[in-house]
Length: 110
Image 1 (cartoon, helix red, strand yellow):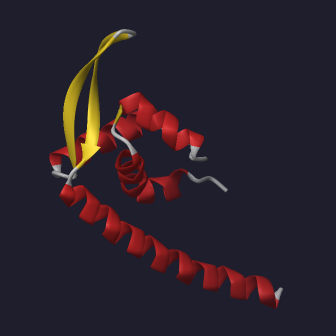
Image 2 (cartoon, one colour):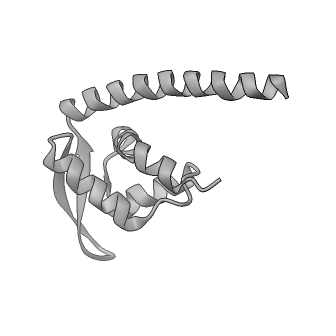
């Protein structure tokens, strides 16, 4: 199954969840998403999501010097972002339960 379209619908929640666990800079967020199994996530998609969530007030940012190269822009979650994530978690659980019921009933009939 091509997960690209599925990922588009849940990328905000995934990014918020990763940043909720620990602040991170762009590529760090990408790396952690991939480490959690979202191997198809694109760098540009994550960077765009970080910028959009920041503009929406869900994330805060700060710059940290790096001994490995240029300064890095870190993102942290705001109270608004935590509220968004809580809503998205609830919506995801309801959706997964509904879809699980649909797919499960189909499998039982086969």
